[in-house]
Length: 295
Image (cartoon, rainbow, N blue to C red; front, top):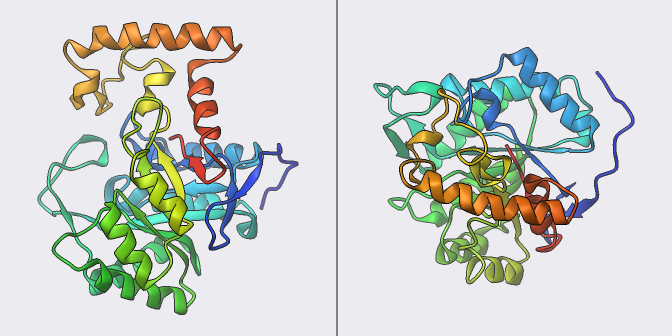
């Protein structure tokens, strides 16, 4: 097991439930493809270890990332080389792949959102096995199954907490009503939502509700799916990336992207940083209960 002197990244309480994480997290999904070609397990483990040695202790994965749940396997291998007690590991369930569905980069055209109690337990047990862990620090419902009352899903998650298999419960892409109903069954520790300078749709209702209930915000795609790194503005898109299929990165939007990126780049120069650093700095200033997880 490796352990070096870490760079000091501030630590914050993600919610009123007590989960403490590094103020900056790391989204591991991209290591198994999506925006670029997938890395080998050796390369992926090296990236995760380097992030840890730079002070990041909060790592995010899902059973839906990578082909055949590959990302959880990769992350599990990396954790074996790090002090487990110093890592906060988040994973997710709820998106199941239909067997006949295939698509490049490990993503699929056909998915099913499932939140039945039986499925919750099955997924948790499978994730623990792939990660080779005794418990999951933060376990999210990746997407809400509207055909199953959220109370039923939460009751099973609550049992997993009582059994010690899960420490904290999270939701991803949930509506305000769902958040309230879920929180009434068992405290929700974190809500994972897309949040960045490009997408601020959660500011009006969702963030105030989370602060009322003591729920932390985990911001995914804080760099605008690569926009603040220059994707489709200053840099071309990798041929193996799915970004080309997203409207924001296609067609006439490409020229608009260049204009917007130029403005951000000019502002970043003014502050002596890169556009990506500027985007993250903005998120850091939204409050200690907002933790970005760039991928």
